[in-house]
Length: 457
Image: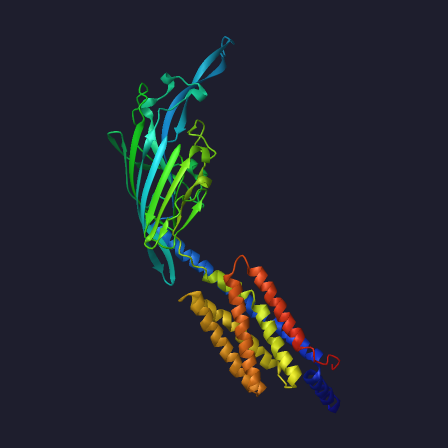
């Protein structure tokens, strides 16, 4: 029994006095604290996923993102194929002409789009997304369809079966859709079939709005003028495909956080102003790699769309996740500060006290996530950081006794959290600033540890 007590006392003495033992203990505790850090990162991802689900619920009820592909002139025509048929009785073969009806698609000669967007925010619990009402006016002309490319006679073109179609990712949000061709008015009605799934947009089918049959005059060369009035509800963004030989677009809104994206960007430099934006586009057929007529099928041109994004820039979860990835660095450097103070001042710090300090550091991230859901990231970071720094500083005062050590720890943690916040905000220079900061920290540690007698244990 006495021998066991002596061995226990020797181990305790070695743990108190040996530098190697303290380093092993600190390393072990740091690895143990990676477990709560992992669960915190999973919590952040789960909350981010919940935000996405809430936003999708709002968008599905109000109206999804809007992509408009049209108007397009749809003209059926007849083709004849020769087929050799053998008479079963006479065994004689003869050639029979088989008639097929095919569809040709023609894009406008020019198209002018004027759209006024009125966004607003919708909430689901603590989550917010942007939705909008839009008034869209489209005007332009179609020239007489040219079938010379496939050598079809005018008599085989079904001019009285032509239609105007418009494809959109969001027919649920359409309030009004009126079309005027020259002096005739037409209603656009919804039509859907399984083949439209080929035109995916963010995993959504493009649905078809079309007119009833219109009568085209094959004898005239006068352009067919169209005017379309759209009122459509949507969410997050609106896009158009530039199918006109000349496409001009003007989108105005009072939304101040919009950004422009897609294959083509506005040409006017003064598009953003204090009351919102007024963006203008002009796109010529030479600027995009597709023709004005298509005789086999209507191509998927979504990649050439341009438009405006009204999404609210919510990146708190992304910033929180990036911050949590530095958790190992924060815990390791904080433990290193306490280790250097303990080694240089000969003050004993119990492993349980190291564990409490480590758990306080991990609490920073749960505070950060929970507060940022109800406030902006900077305010949440300041509150969470100040709380954890104050807690560890006061707690270290009870351990280290002297005032100068807790003050030094508080200043060090403040500098460390400030450094991490700067890295999170940076994009292009994050790696450079991070590398320089870590180099400076390493230099400080090397300088502070130069007087430690490493031969003592």
